[in-house]
Length: 404
Image (cartoon, rainbow, N blue to C red; front, side, top):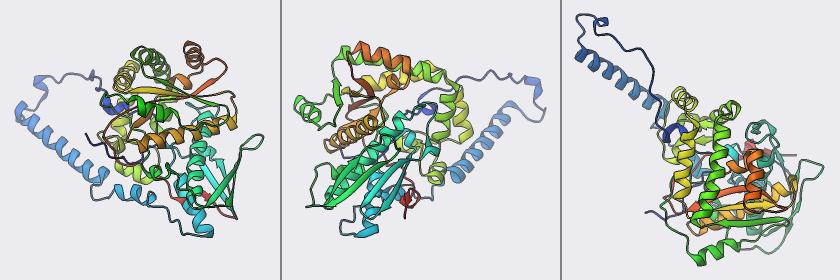
């Protein structure tokens, strides 16, 4: 198995349209005498096959655009940080590394404003996910992920970040103060962090590595908990399954998920965001096919697929907070990104499996069943070993920066 560090892929919802079998059609059976006399059944099948094959070939040429280099844009945004840059070019470089953070549906819901040595991060509400995240909890967690990348990159170039967390305002303020450059251990993992959404190889993470992983520094009010035993994993799976059933029976959720899926390379390159099938090794299909399959999918198919994925993992990790507010959500994102970067440095893969925290009723039961007490579970992810996957796309840095 390839244990090399993978490319980035920040999105945490799985790809049901390719992992599930398509339901059989209830179409009308063609009667034998409905064919013209000169068109035998054999000739009909050959003709139909040629038409379908030609259409498929045309689709590959038009939609998948094999002459387009899909890896180049992903690689460009992950180029090494230009540590010798100064002034605005340096601020742009720091923001480029911040945008490599995880975000729900890879929506990249952030805007950065720059003034001297102050960078502010605020939500881009046009990229909200109201169905899966009606209270913007995961949106602020995504901003916290970007904040953590920004802080790690800033320390690398000799700038100490002083953070003002959002309270009444909807802004995270980072004041950058000159200091001695810090060679952080997590910095080199930023371009390679990813959510790896397919099955893992089933092997366990060793005890020493688990202790190292769980020693990840936390933020005020944030805690980390591991589920490694077979019984705990099966218990976690019960809540993931109930969350899946609730979400995949909800039309607004499915509609929102479908809007953020990029079913082929052409779609992904046009938007530079969303959940691109190519980053997960899945078959690329025209949007109309993907929409139809996703719309016809039975909820228990998602349940079965995620059960297989969780059982193939070494375990699961939960991040919880003592408060439910924007600052706590941002701190949750910081801890998650820190944890994900450490796992990347250890060649451990991970993926969000956050259904138990996205459905309010399920979240309450999940909290009680595992004795979280006064803390509130915010994120759930699985981890283990798997092959590397291609990098996902990011919007141009210029599209997310507001200059004075």
